[in-house]
Length: 296
Image 1 (cartoon, rainbow, N blue to C red):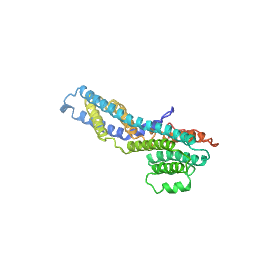
Image 2: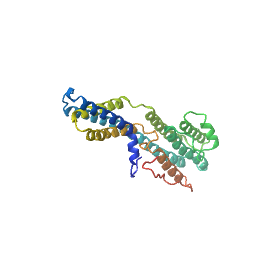
Image 3: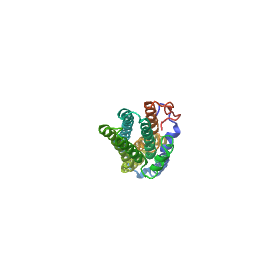
Image 4: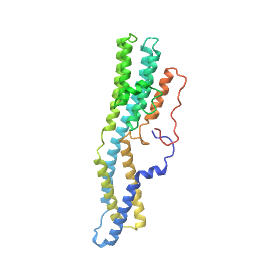
């Protein structure tokens, strides 16, 4: 999640520095060869690079649109996780019989752990790191046996709900409601994993880069002005194209631990605050704050 803070110029430059080096080399080479063999080169009208630039714009628009759809879908999935996590704890508190506060707290804390675990898993980090304050040692040892740690946490919550039903602390209709909420949480996890593992077609990027370099070459031949003015102009124009392409590339992978990611850590902290307040806990953490220009 980008914040209302100044984005460092170094961050922007690092995204396109290698592409700009290639553009600089290509443009200097084209300018040199154009001047050296000017008599052998036909006149190239500006309509040709203008046509290529239009094609680049169309491809960029499609790429940005598809990438934003993936990014927005990821955000909607985590919005559903927020809603279902709150609903899950409210249902636990209202549907279970009195005297089960300890079990309700255990399941609710496990739900907090699930949110953090899922975010860390999607980002390729250790999915059980820093979860010891929410889980018992028995739970930690249990989920270590599973490859999918968040799924193991949901399974443990399902077992405890079944135990409440077997001890008659939960009627059948209440169990169905809680199970439906678990199903929705599992569904949200599956959607996140689908976005994470679905590869965006790399042909868009390959074709787009080829078009940009072709655009630079044709524009350099068409302009035929002094290289001191032509090369900076080509760099400036191509920078815009490459920055838009990089933005699309980053948005299409919203779980890669980048500044453009879905702010899963901040969202999980919000869920933790909400659940602890529902449980009337005394120690409530602060809203996630960061000094950076983005939220984790």
